[in-house]
Image 1 (cartoon, helix red, strand yellow):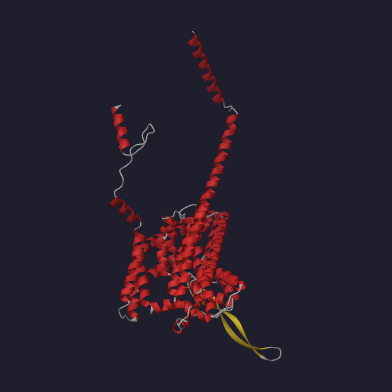
Image 2: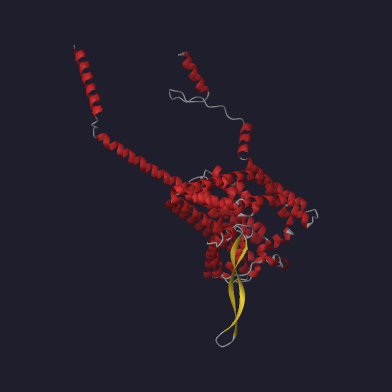
Length: 528
């Protein structure tokens, strides 16, 4: 007995529950230093990434005072260039393998539901972002400021050629069905125009602008995404014959994620030099902000409203969970988005963050996030709406209600085809301007400050993708719980119905008879 009491006391001192139901004394509180160390270890990568951004800003501001040649500026940005090259290197294997394995592991009915919910979320949030952009542009009126003529010549060579709206959407459909999967890894389809002279019935010379298709540099990520999803569904249809290939893509995907985890530890260094190199490249920041400050402020405030209020509010209303805890889990990916200015390059880190920090399952994150990086461009849609209203105000064009609706719809639709690369949204801005009859030459002003606005665009794009994955995880968990509850209730009903009717097993009858005879014998002996 003494040994038993000593054992119970030892268990109680270790903080375990006692056998009689009483709670044992709690552990001594964790020392502050140990708690700080534990928090730092858990968030070491996030802390290093934030430190990399801050140090990069200070390095850039310090080096700007030194007269550097163009070659020296390129050398400063070399470690950052390495990060972008590493991330781009694994985009294709990651996107293709993750989508094939994801589509093959999900039931076709569930796949359709997941895809439908994802597209609905992406469409609604993009429309909200476009509306915020238009409202902010009308409130702040960035086009009312006087723009210096020197700023108008910035980047004229980079202004994309104007294109008909119908040809832009036809190019989008053509890229969904690439003619060559190998070339889709580095080239996409684009329409250009050629003037062809001819004669009509009256022998009058006429000139016709005929669309001519050509391939341009840039990954056709949309075509690869569609092919990977369809190929994964086809593998699932094969059944056992497709299991070997599914396992191959799963293994390839896991190996790619190991590479991503290695690259993540290099990301803080790369981001530091990316930010420093971009600050050194700037010519005259003060003059640029003075001329285009209201436009920059309009875009950044709109992105902040959508990213810090609207998206978290949607997430909280649906899941009743803290959205800012979710945001903290993807902070490393958001900082990488700021540094690389590419949602496609941020995709590997985003997958790693949502799976390890936010509890999103692999088959959801690796299926939805590549699609979101392709079609969900909240930041690009918001900035394009601000830019369209900004250019209209610069040219003293008052937009009517139909033109505003046209800007909203066209921005939402054209953002789907926006490339997930730096300045990808500017290339589709010409479609919106053509749709409402605004001059495309003023895009040079947008390109002058795109290095800054595009970074907040990218942060908003990848944040929307992550929230979409989190919401889909919530829907899947809730659906599975409902199905488990229904199965349990069915099991209880099946178990209760036989209980009302006595079973007629020979063994039970024999055992029951024996027990009854024994009880009668005991009663008889007791009476004697």
